[in-house]
Picture: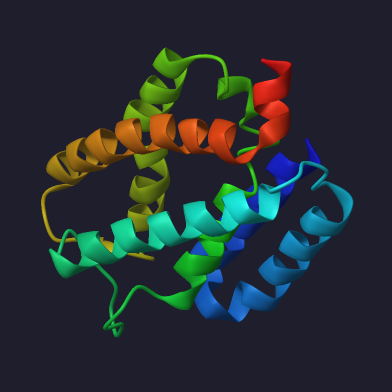
Length: 163
């Protein structure tokens, strides 16, 4: 519950105030790590997911699917948002771990809504029509969510032992 609340605070703050919200987001991430990260290798999982997410969003910017005004590269606040998202995998999104179908559907249908909300709040512009951007994001995220949970099961030994 606290993990989900912290992520939503970070999402909203980073999308609305950008880099100015990073200190608050960093504090919430640190609190998460100190009080809630109990699983061995969770920090490694967070780091790997963040790198993958930054690469994906950078490619989407490179191909002008995402446009961030006055930014040659994706903004730092988006990197911090990826860290915040990655911290939900072992906690708020744990309910997805046992269903590849659910992972795929959440990725395809729900995850792109975050970007559409960011677009509505003018944190990002789309270089393509919204429907086409949503379809690309749905395709990317459907595969990404399944891969993230595969990666989680690979990196986090406790998952394999309890399965």
